[in-house]
Length: 222
Image (cartoon, rainbow, N blue to C red; front, side, top):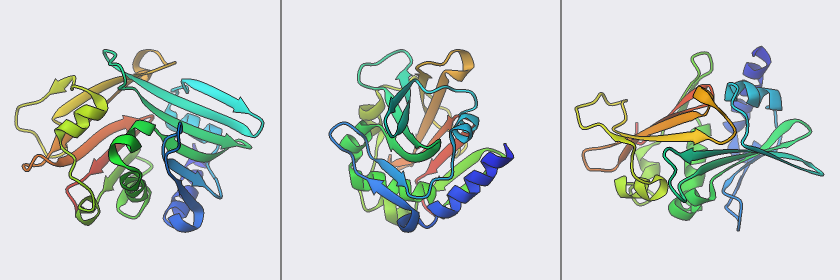
């Protein structure tokens, strides 16, 4: 685990210099938008550790490396609402990451690039030891794009599994979505995320857990 922590911090230092060490790649005809790492540090073993025992749903091999595909299905299944994440490896190192193409189709490449830059940038708090990542998206960045509301979330992910109508603490999500990872069983297969909205009905928070890390996108600005 110590080597994984060291590799994470080395990658973090590179990601903070995004334009020097990273290239954003727009969505293509088939592949979703993502990033290419110019001087990769994370290994397959690092990704296995971060995934906390969750296997990729598929592994595709070719002459230059292999691609791990993590694919989550809605619970219960809803047609067209799956979510996928692709990790590209060469010489045992993570060289690229791409998110589901549906995100770019709905949100646009420019917004996806902004979110990725914010997620890997200085507005994100990375706590390796408590396995927590909190990304504070500045209001000025969100304001560059049409506001996201509940209808947009439902178009991407479908109806919620649960809506909490009681008063909540700010960090608690009000709309809950449940997914299951193809290729995994039991608790390892389960994944859920939640979204909350501001009083003006615009998106406020997205909270989730991916592998061994809890993730938060805070859209309320700083």
